[in-house]
Amino acid sequence: MSAVKPLEAVARDRVGKGAARAVRRQGQVPAVVYGGGQPPQAIAIDLVRARTLIYAGGFKTTLFEINAGGKKTRAIPRDFQLDPVSGVPLHVDFLRVVAGQTLEVEVPVHFINEDAAPGIKQKGGTLNIVMHTIPLVVPADAIPDAIEIDLTGLEIGETIHIEAVKLPANATFAGEPEAPVANIVPPTVLGAEVEAEEAAVAEAQSAEAAEEKAEGEAEEAAESDKKED
Image (cartoon, rainbow, N blue to C red; front, side):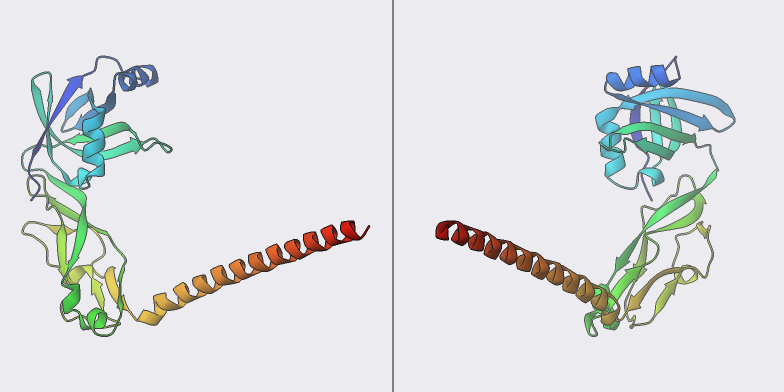
């Protein structure tokens, strides 16, 4: 289960595009805390702290205790915006969490024991991941860091469906139970794609080399004609 993380913030009196730009110029990220039957609260969080949390992974499954001017609120990130060029955080939305509340979250999937899967280890198959996260409905205070899926004994052609994944207590799936999470594919499936790509690169390089050779021969012929003149 993810531990509750403290997050220092500053309450904002002004909202809007102009106010948000002013916050960013001060090295902070504008954010809002909403839900829980209370009015939205505009806050600002430190840019470096926000960037570290977002890029560390698991940001949207982490429960935070936000301290804004001495007022502490438990909330979970619901969305964030990044600058499309620089990747700098521009805005964060937090959802208030109240006691006994359940949430729908996307929990990362970790695959373990690849070496114990005959289809991969002995037969050269490849793990084809269909879902990198699984939608779960869980208590707000019991969000798992990740879901582990054991690959032991899996052969080529076998598929892991959501309904076969072991979940922590009090967690339920929010998606289709028959949805595929991953499967083991034959080595030729991905190998053919790689070979085709390598062949295309080799062909392009060969054509480029031939063109350069032709240009070089043309230049030599032109210089030879000048000398004869």
